[in-house]
Length: 73
Image 1 (cartoon, rainbow, N blue to C red):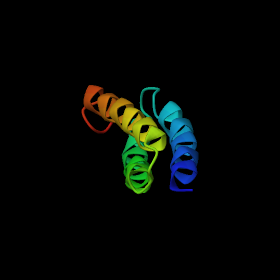
Image 2: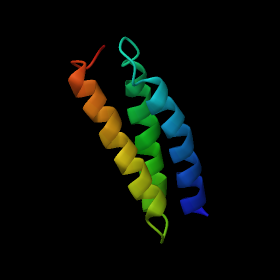
Image 3: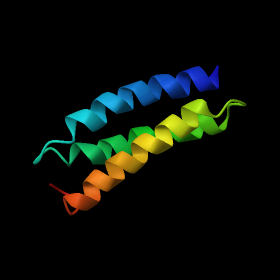
């Protein structure tokens, strides 16, 4: 059950990260980091780790985008 919730959070996170990719919308990725952290924590409670890994990959994309924009842009 936790894995399904984690994957659902990951799908929401995918939308948030995609919205935050264009220039001047990078601040949205701060929200993505919070949502992703919740998804990873819920995924860690599951026996299956697919949801947790999905959220970690999206967190890395959001963090990479933030580092390219200097954390703000």
